Amino acid sequence: MLGPADYLVWAIVALLEVCAVVSVIRQRSLKKYFTLVLYLCIAVLVDSARYAILATSGYRSQHYFYFYYYSDAVLTIVLFFALIGLYSRVFADMGIGKYLRAGTVLLLAATAGISYYMVNSSSDKFVTHFVDEISQNLYFVGVLLTYLLWAAMMKTRENRTRVVQLVLSLGIYFSAYAGSYALHNMYPHLEIWRYVAHFMSLWLPLSWAYTFVKVPEESRMATASVLVPNQ
Amino acid sequence: MSNKWLVVVVLVLLVLTGAMGLRNVVTAHAGAINVANGGAPIPPDVWSNGGAPIPPDAWSNGGAPIPPDAWSNGGAPIPPDARVN
Image (tube, rainbow over all chains, first blue to last red; front, side, top):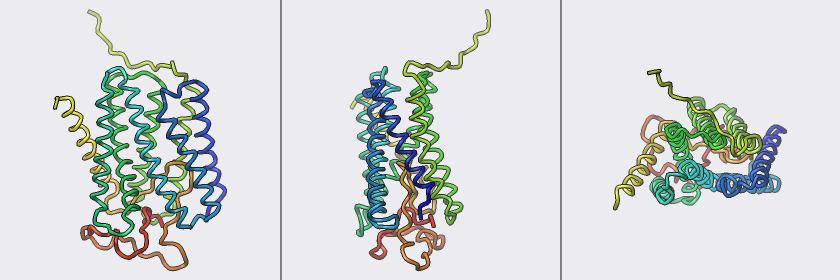
């Protein structure tokens, strides 16, 4: 059963998400971080709906189970677009917007195609399996895209503190989950994994809220300089 | 088709291949994974409704390759987090 810690984490996550959204709106940066704010807004709505379903149907109900995983797929897709939004911010000056959009659509379509192929043989509960599969596949696409974005940022000497922190926190979030999955596979019968995943859900709203509240838009990081020997 | 579009297609395919490979490495021989977008508690395994003993993990019986229709045995919905409990 759920304890006070479960509800506390849930409430803190929702509060941090609202805090980050309010901070972006107050700073009039909504256009710059639209996809991130969209993710946070949908996450708040989903959390509210999940709570309503949990309160009415119960934690062990089929309603909560299905709503949780269906809404999770929606959130993963929106998080994918949030990540693409960060790509747009990083590569804004390079004029590759149309290629980025085309690549995004192609990647999403290909992931959906692979997911369809994976569950094609399943005649029972096809939609449920498809939703689950595309959610997981998109998650791993996100893992890889985050690392690629970080490599590109290192290469282009990106120094906007906000963008750096947003991408890094996303990288830590994805990496922590990947690590916990690997450990989960090694020790699958430990009940602790449910709580690990639950507590890790704090990370993204916490780091994004901190970034939007504490780090000014114009803040820049000092990049490592190349030493040139005296002639 | 210009070279830039071909580069986009190649990059997409590389990312997709890499992501699927990473997924296979991380979740090898495992059931589905838990993703926790949002703060809601992850729902319990559907298998664990009621007091009956939890059946063995569908993915881990023997070392044989996982059959393509592993999901379609029986009518009950197989939970994504079958290995949690």
